[in-house]
Image (cartoon, rainbow, N blue to C red; front, side):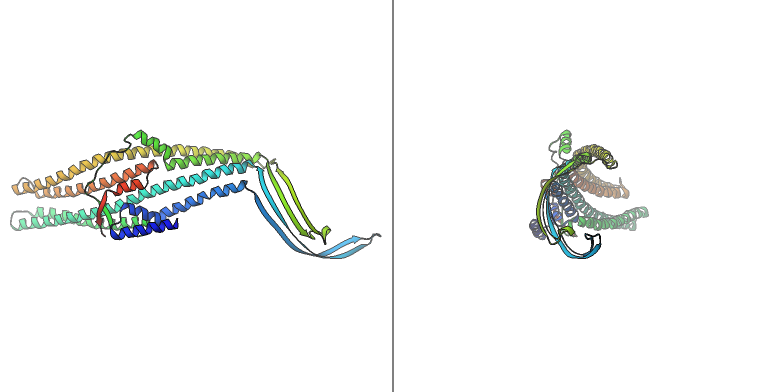
Length: 445
């Protein structure tokens, strides 16, 4: 794993030095050093160790117990005539016992053995969900940077246009062909554009910092959208097929289902508290003067036997624990049902979001062209006397609004497709590469 991460880092750095950082390289970089992604990986690794922990319960236990004591005391013994005599005791007692214990029958440990398998798989499912969620959030923050930068560019262009309009109306007023109202209206629009530019520049700074949280380093040059933006139909193009896939492959649903299985085994483990246990115990003991009666003796012996433990009464603990486990299992089942409904709703929303997003992009493309024609007509009408200065300002405002809305709609379309893939557990390198194909031009900060 470290070698693979090092290779990814080298490739990302090499690519970044030659061209702008794009979404695919950002994804690779996040997997290498992104704290959020790495945290999820460590959580998964910890969960996988549950297998070894649980399996240890049915494997042999071997241990050594050793002691080395010095005994110093007195001993009183009566003689033949009934008189008591005191003897000093001063001897060493040392020894060691090697013991092997193997479970032969223990329903609790067998339930734990099955339970840890579900817990390990649950950890993998949680990681899959977090990894896909991280990919979606990374794309969202990447696109936020692009939108913030585009907003700055449009705000600067709008400010420049309004500055030119202020200068134009001032010249017309000076020549006696304009009014102070036209000048004030243009100046007001310019001042608002200046305020919008300041806010947009702040948004770029914040968006870059939020993206840095996922990358582990500040982004410098990144790739933005290309001019061409195809919107191919979804595959499959049927909502029901997406819902079926989500119910089967969604990491969230899979994790909840495994959580129910884990809770089932917890019920079995709790109820097994009423069952007896049987262990095989093998031992070997070596001792020197272990007790008072074995002074000056060396004992060596082995033992083999079965140990049966039959629980009779535990103060109601086992019954209460069983009822508690059943309630927890029922809660896990309802959580599964709730998650399934959430995923179905989310899948439905994202599916229709992709379809409506495609239509919205086409509509906004037309709106941009219409706004450009409207501005041209307003300028011509102003010269002919049929339009006012306010009409020109409104047309200019409408153009920049339409262009920003179009850019945002394109980004939202790509993000919605990624969310849809994540809902069905299918978001991977192919989806990242597909979204990345829309990027190209380089942005520098």
